[in-house]
Image (tube, rainbow, N blue to C red):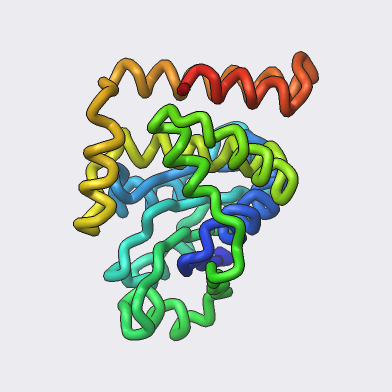
Length: 222
């Protein structure tokens, strides 16, 4: 099992790196988990069992990996896994002394630290999108020029997950999300998620030009 750890405050470059990794696999080969709602037992099951229809290499992507996660507990998966597994762990900005970084270094995991100082960030776009502000179109144009359509869609999925999953421990982010989602209910977010999936399908199937499809999606929010 190959393990890759992506962490740091640079969300833009971190998400781009993840997209590049995903492109190396077909959809059936990719499993996605989020440790805000899935358990370590769910993760181990994905590593051990795999898919009944895929015998080749698989990619397991795990979001919101906690700082206290000890990667040595996954060592037992090495001998029990089904097929070749690449495990990608996506973390926030853990301290150098955190359990996850210490265990990653001990196991000689591939570690990528993404700094964020000079990035064009997607967060102004996401804030304007969920708050229904017209400035969102200018932010959309910047992101499309710099990173492209698939990155923008990935960040919209991130925004929706952020509002559906349990609130983060950060006091600042918790208050921000509570304020942003006050005008919406669970059904609204289900509809947004469906419309985002439909937009991705239309773009990939060539049914609509990328920028037109994304602009239509943004209008659904604003």
